[in-house]
Length: 395
Image 1 (cartoon, rainbow, N blue to C red):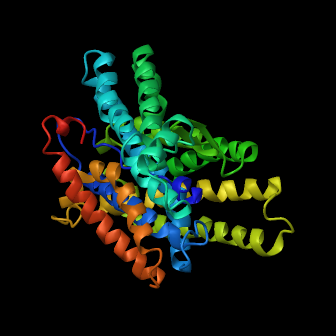
Image 2: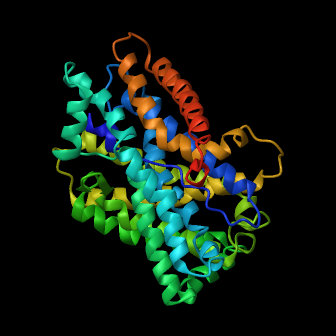
Image 3: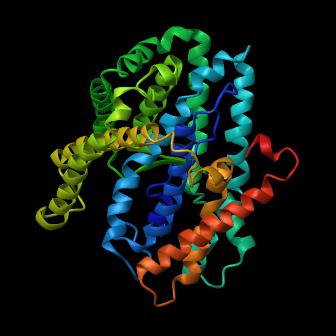
């Protein structure tokens, strides 16, 4: 059961754009990633990776391997884009910290004692049908374990923001080297890609070798995947460097070279993605003890993971930058509610999967119902919550 709670946890970054203007391409990218979060959590019980239902489909394994490898990093990168512009438009960094506490800390605190217990109660009932919710809630809060599900993203993002705010107060110029690289990426995106890949591989591979791929630092509801915490930090501050340079003057400019070759980045991403599947085959079919993997294996997988993450992030960004002028998008109606949908969706997903568990339906049918109903119910709930006075400041 714990695989569902921790594997591939992801979240929608709040749209902390500066009020001057919105960037349609980035807004749609963020909304697209929010939908991917729901897809990920809808299909993971029906995979080999997180097989908590009798039904499964190999196609879902392909989806989960891809999403788990990049979308958390991409959310941190998108969140980082608005760090320096937000700090530049605040006379004191204290107001920035208060804003982030409201937008990130408050939702984490509230959902950790409401949405998360409600979600995990569905898993607990599968093992102990007579367990009452009050008893379950009390044990989770006082005894533990107290998982945070996908909401771990909020407190980690809050810490990254506070670190960024402290660095800005020490010296706003500390981000200049990354800004220069980002501006250079307007003409030479491949060089920027190689930089991102090199730095993320440099921090991820050693952490994977030390902690392994599955170990989580945990303290109450505060948890984060040990091997990836520095990996996420790099993507957050890469985003901060791009934002400090100005999106319209950086690698993410709609007229830049990266946006013109989105299909090339997509093809490039297939190479490390295929390598990851090759290594998974080696682990399952060739290695004598797949539970204790040699260091060379972890290092090779770590390099493929870092390469795929960077390539697919560049491909998705390039796609939305390239086609941002297409007018209305089916993602647009979800835009204002994307953050709220992320906050509440996990409870709906786990309860829908609980209710469908005993039905003899194909995995594809179950996943489709969980996705459609989960998205619909999360959207309705978010719309209702946003009508509460003052809720717009958070949601």
